[in-house]
Image (cartoon, rainbow, N blue to C red; front, side, top):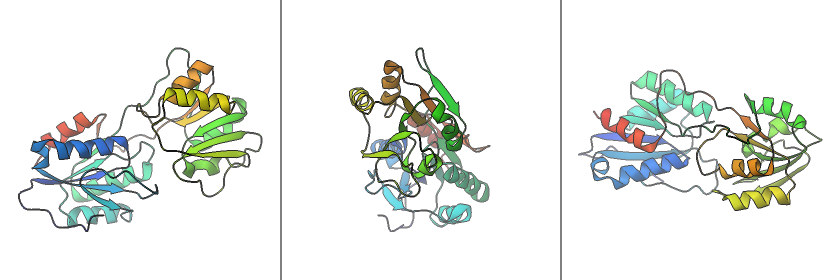
Length: 262
């Protein structure tokens, strides 16, 4: 883990990547791989520390929170950060608003790197909810054996559902209130289509619950549900904070970095 050294001489900028996603890792890899960027930018990757054994990207790494908007703004100023890329999970709403607030305090440009969300296609039977509580309210009407892939931190929203059986898949064991009828599968993705087909069939899943995370890594479960005629309950993602620039790909983020170079 980085000891937070000063900005090296000869570098034009310092990019702080608020990470933990595939896109964050790919951006860090691109910045380390491309000579024009590698010679221009020092890169610090910030991880929340919620996963026990994270895959560390190239560059310096810091793990843990900043202490809110003021703490993040102070870190940005103290470490000479010239660009912030918020490449956190599309549902990491609090961190995204902290990043937007820090931009307002420091004037350091911030980009939200968000992979496109999913859209239903022919043969899909999707129901949408605005949040986890809304998903829990409608779930019993869609099925009784749910494959819950919304993450371990939101299980309390479903803890009151005594009539539904849940299969929960997560990297680390769940904590806090959980549904009374639940089986936990500890696994790290990505998961292939054959795996998802077999898993849903073996556990007799009749409804899939997911957040609109987007991307290809976790999309096979949607295909498996479509093939099996299983309804999907999708939690909509929160919007990017107003006024923050947004990119949907690593390539677009690189163009933004090149265009905002100081």
